[in-house]
Image 1 (cartoon, rainbow, N blue to C red):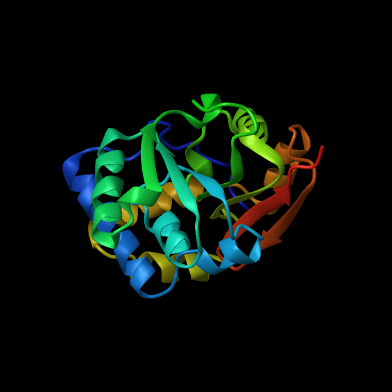
Image 2 (image 1 turned 90 degrees about the vertical axis):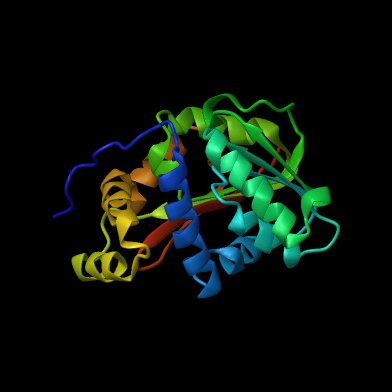
Length: 220
């Protein structure tokens, strides 16, 4: 039986040591091909101007830029430390001219209506204090025909897989964050209920062993 959800922080990952450890973990995932670049592309997000919410160190968006042509990325994160880190990583990728990073909250996106061709996020949904409000904000800033991709861990993953993830998480100092993130994550059924009460009704929920995603297009 899946345990009840335990909400996690809604102020992001902050502090020099924690941010450095998180960056190391994300680089470890990137180098092994375990971030969701392929799933993002397969969702149809392949062109135009994209917004990444909760970008963290920025690797997913930067890898997406590498694999697409004439695209631009705007990042939004609630953590000033992650904003600084993402800018530094964009520079190391040679992608500063195609990126910009902003501080802000997903519940009140600081962008105009119908601005982006795509909005995506990976691994931050469980931190959102008001996910339904954020879903409606994503809809607002998307252009008609624009696509969205929202992905996160799933709380109802097999316990053996949870142990496998825990053992494979490097550096080990970040392992407590993994546990709290899984405890705060949603099940596929919960995610479907969240989306049903928002503008993101035209969606597909996909499940994998350890994560779930909500993807779709803005049709008006």
